[in-house]
Image 1: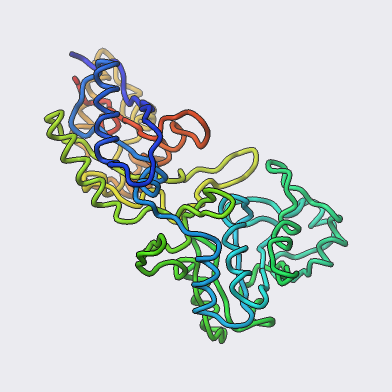
Image 2: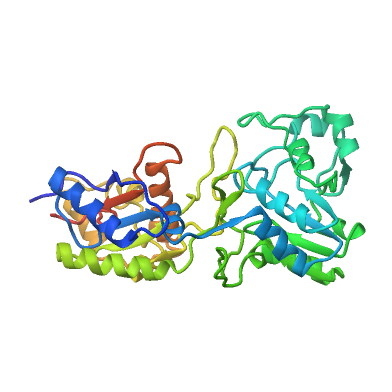
Length: 397
């Protein structure tokens, strides 16, 4: 049967997952129920995505504010600097509360005019009018209030994050500073917790070279295996989310075991080689709010081997405007397909591929999954993607 449709994406409804549930069985049964209801056909290279929260919840990967405080107090005494956290009630507020509970004082260094993922602390026009140079100027909270006002609310959340973060301290032990050079924190303390996500290794290196005595990342907190609480050996507190007023859900661990077992079960059920991945935040930026959605340390913490690498695609628009533009009395569709079938195995740097997106396949698929499942009440934490690896030259299903 000739193809008339390319990539399709289905959000698959699943039951509410609880700690201790057999997630492998739930995923396979949910995919099977969707198949029996919708009568679609499985094919090799279909992809099943499972949101990271299902994995973490099933394995009970939770901690409390007190767990953070206990771990921080073991590793740092007295005062600590916390550098470049994101502005988030869901992602960072409870982490700060735990850190502040575990030490005497927290010097919190915020980047400006926005955090790492695009949440703004200030109006950039007012910043320019005030003559502030974000590359060199260091602002105290008093400076910030004098220039921008007593209350500066985030346009989406309606939260004044500087006030909120101060209020999370213990007896006023959170002091706010604004700067974009991490070395500024060393004027207040030599003990630092690095909180930026995607640039964390560079920030750690800068601080160590500048004379910091203790440099930890959020990935060093709640990272040791424990029978009493959750942990993540790879990412620590990175990728965590608020679960309740006292509980924090960590990024899932041991994800490879899940995806490999689900793949084996789906293969047995369908007879097809279906790829499986766990996904978190997608890697995309909101054009209105300017917020980059990727607050997780990676888009996909675990995936099957068939999802490794980057796409190797011709730019079909380039072919149409160049190689095919002057052809007459020929079937240009078939010629285009011939170009695709005979393309080089590595098109990197070649004009015919210019403008294609050289991103990791898991980042592209994870973003597609995240946009499909959403972060609200859709109830589709499992995603089935079909036809993603097909191209214009794929003649039939």
